[in-house]
Length: 392
Image 1 (tube, rainbow, N blue to C red):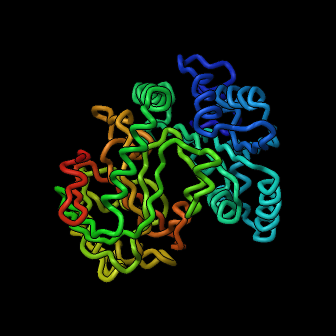
Image 2: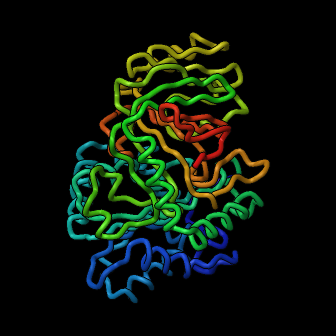
């Protein structure tokens, strides 16, 4: 039975029992990723019941840097989530607007925003989904997301798969060659920019799209110097562990089909259309001139049609392409979940629908990540990914 009162996550609470070096990771975050300066004002979003050890270590490093801990916004505890909508927002629109305005005022005082671990065990959102993205569209500071994603199929943090993920994340943060990653990502971006990409995989996907000139390089650099050159909202955000090369396709360029079936990829993250329901019979998403013109299944087609009709907004647009580049975020044998939702080497992730998180303009009730582990991708005639491996 799920408890609704606050309780610490094992080895992530104030008295960690798991042998993870949160102090070293906090130093990496504050000193190397942010290069936090004296008197810079830091706003934190955190859950002391799930991530207390990292929160304590980060606060210590902020003090050592001579920076100012402006405020810490606490995530919703299980009991508090029941007083809000399933996505963590206020149900009353006037209340929601007042909360957004007040939070925006807090951000206006801050130079840096740190988003630490969420309690992923909760069936309901433990933060206001979309709130920070809406604020970051106007805010000019810089931010780091330090998430700690466990296997959604195994909520118990003591499960062996989650202990393995813990060690992989720590390794990918502390032992990554950040300079080499940045160089590799810049090379890939130059090869993929303003080109036609073709994506194919064993399930039958065959998709073409064109890219623009801009790619976000999630290379672990959230310094003032890098953020000063930001082109999109995403350029002011770094994910740690890092490794995502991201771009939004030219809207009307997408042509072809995405084919999904159980056993290929892990396409279950996000909200809206429940893709898993149709994977057993296969799901095909057909694009023409940049829009989804039809979705097909060999199973319950009327049910799929009703579910698709219920989605609203830019549900028929491809929102983002993400290519994982971190060699230390390696897959775990027997585990379907890809570490950090696919930032490891050559994991390809396509987003359908909403893309505010990517700095895009799609707004929709649908936001789904579709992941491909054995894809081939070319930029023109240049092979970028072959059978799930980066080329070059």
